[in-house]
Length: 167
Image (cartoon, rainbow, N blue to C red; front, side, top):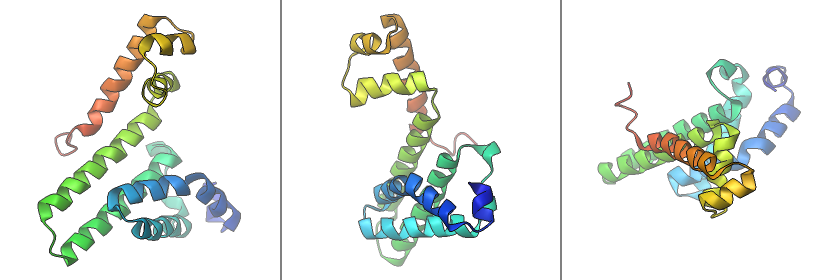
């Protein structure tokens, strides 16, 4: 995909857009709470990808994670610009930025989890299954289902950690 973008193949950008546009728009809208701003950010993110196809480095993570990080950065920058231009309460804006950062980290953590953990969490939270039901659907013991859920939740809980403390 990256090589096709570097060669200027518009179809590669189209495929990338089809794959990630809903993710980009969803994240941007979550941060901005403004569908029109989210649409603009979506265009900007894909414009950046088109103009900078070599910016992605697979050594640093998946293409999905990179696109999500670009979106997060663009939306947070836009939010700060809007807040700076208006006379909004800076603390409220920073709280919104922190919440958006936490949501983006949570999305990254979940998407990076091994499939068995992600599958157990999906059954428990999206499917509203308890650990016994999840174990039966996964074909694993109840202890294994509890272990997967516990580990998945432990990983997910790190999304709320302050990124400044981790430096």
